[in-house]
Image 1 (cartoon, helix red, strand yellow):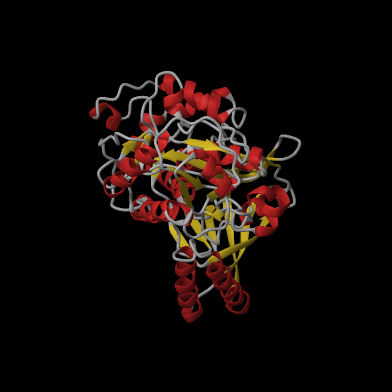
Image 2 (cartoon, rainbow, N blue to C red):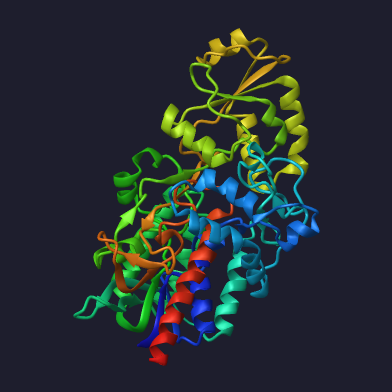
Length: 495
C-alpha cells in the first residue's frame, strides 16, 4: 500500500497529526492495533489550556499566557526548553479554538470546589496545583459531554480526520519500520486482521478497555486471547510512506516488562490506558536509532477529593509526619507517597469533617468517585473516640491534631485495589526536535523521515503531570509533527 504520511496510533496525537497533514494535502494513512481512541477515549477528556481562552473569558476568568507560563514552569521543569513552553502557552487559546473548529465542544461553567474531576454541571476547573502559586486560574477544560468525556473528544477528532480523506486501517499492528539504504524511514511492516478474527478481536479489545481497565486480571486473560488471534490470523502487509512516519502509539504502562525495568516502584498502580500502550511505538523508534529519555517518569494519582471537605484533614505517614499539602495535585501527592514514603499514607480527619464530607457526596461526585468514597469511608477507615486510641488501633503515630471526636484515620496507601485504585501513566518516550517533532538519535541528529508525538515522545508533561496536560501535549505535538511533514512535502514539491 502506498501513502504519503503514515501515522502509527490513533488517539488524540495521531488524529491531530493526521488532520494537519491531510489539510496540507498529504495522502494520510493511520494504523491502529484496535479500533482507535487509545487512552484518549478512556480519559476524562480534559485539555489543559489558558492564557485567555473563550471559555475563561465567558466565565469572567482573568488569565494571561504569562501567568500560565509562570505556573507551568514549576511543573514542566527541564522536560522541554523555555522557548517550547512559551510557544505552548502563547498558542493555548488558539489550540482550544482549533479543537472547537474540529467539533470538540467546551463550556464555561466553573467548578467552585477542589475536585479530581468535575461533575456534569461543571466543565472548567483548577485541574492542577495552580492555587498554590501566584495568579491562579482554572485551566482544566473538560470536553462538554456527560460522564468521562474523552470518548466524545476522540470521536469528534476522528470524524474530522475522516472528513479530510484520512484512511484508517484498524486492527493493524505495526511490526517494524522500513528504512532505505540512506537510513531514511520509508514505511511500516504490519500485521492486519480481517473477517471474523477481526470482529472477535474488536469485541475482546473493547472488553479489555472497559471493564478490563478496572479488573487487571480480566485484562491479562483477554490480552492473551488477543495476542493469539493476532499471531494466528494476522496477515502481513507493508505500507510505504513517501513523506514520513509519525509515531503516536501511546506510552508503555501496559507493558509489565518495561515498567519493571524503568519504573519498578509504580507497579502497584492501575495502568491507565489500553493494551496498545505497550511501548511498541517507542520500540519502533529506538530500533532505527531514536534516543529515549525520562522513561522512569510516571504519573500516579492519589486524589483525596472530592468531597472537598476532606481538604480539612491531614495526610500523614506512619510516623505521623505530614506528607504534603493537600492543595497539591493528586499526581504530586502520589509522587510524594511513592518516592518518599513507600506508597503508604493515611488521611486524618475529625468527626465534623467526615460528616460534612458525607453530605457532599451526592452533589460533588461522579459515579466512580462515589464508589471510591464508599470504600474509603467504610473499609479503609478506622474510627476512635480519642487520638491515642486511634493510634493504638492502627499502629500509626498521631501527633498534635485539632478537632472534635470521633477521629478517623483513612488508609489511602497505594496498593492494588478495585475500590480505590491508583491510576498511572508513563510520561517519557523518544527524544524529538522541539521545533519539528522529528525523532532524534543519541547524537542529536534527526532520524530521517521519522517523527513522534503524544506519549511516544518526550514532551510538555514528561516531568510532571496535571489533569489535561497530556491531552494538550498530544494536540500540540501531534499538530506540530503533522505540520512539519506537510511543510517538508511542500518544499519538496516546490523544488
